[in-house]
Length: 331
Image (tube, rainbow, N blue to C red):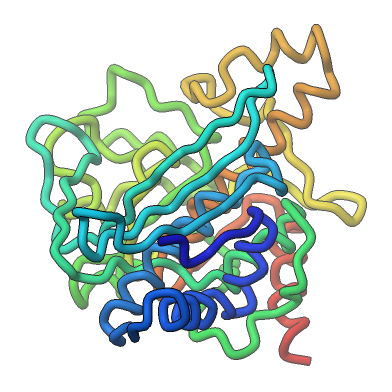
């Protein structure tokens, strides 16, 4: 039974304006003649917020179809998320995603930064969509109506030094080992030193820190990981209570805009592999591609903390801009 149908744009707006759950509740009541319990609604809320983050990708057309199906025959209380559209040859396609909830996580032996997730009714925490929308607007990823974070219970601070950021995150981590430092991929990760915690890959003035080690316990649960920095490849798909984020020279604020610079990315970063060749063939396309990858990288890093995010920018102008954007909603 379809309990929601619309476009990607409809779904994004309904989520940002807190209309989605009401629509689902009313459709279930009308179409299925039943009501939905609070625990069930909470489970959907968390999963659908995660789908909101997933769909926040410019590669997915705004007019792509979005549908939510409930109580499929022989699969009681299963909820599926459907995305539909047309391929390059005009052929219709549908992607079906079964929504799940995490119950617990544990390290996968021998695989760095990988955790197993288990389902069984527990809620997975995701960052509030309004913070995500505010971040998109602030980083100039897309235009949204979220000019401030008024009414959102989320702690975000722009720090004046990486040491200040680290001190906050280390303190937050004491409660239950659920805070981590993350960084943009502007510093190389040499193979020869990936298991040497005394080798500090990231150096900013007097501040030094290593990338997370290659091997051993997962970055998300190893207590010693608080003294290491995770990158986009380490942290994507993980959630912490708090994160500290180092924004490198690949994203700056110049001439009134947030700009990106792929030449400042590390040589060991494969996410921009082939960008120099593309730049020779089609410079404009290369710039667009790099900008999307770099801004999406920082959007991902800055939404890994469910309760708070503490940011240090190597570019002072970007730090001041972010402070102004935070202050705007308080004036």
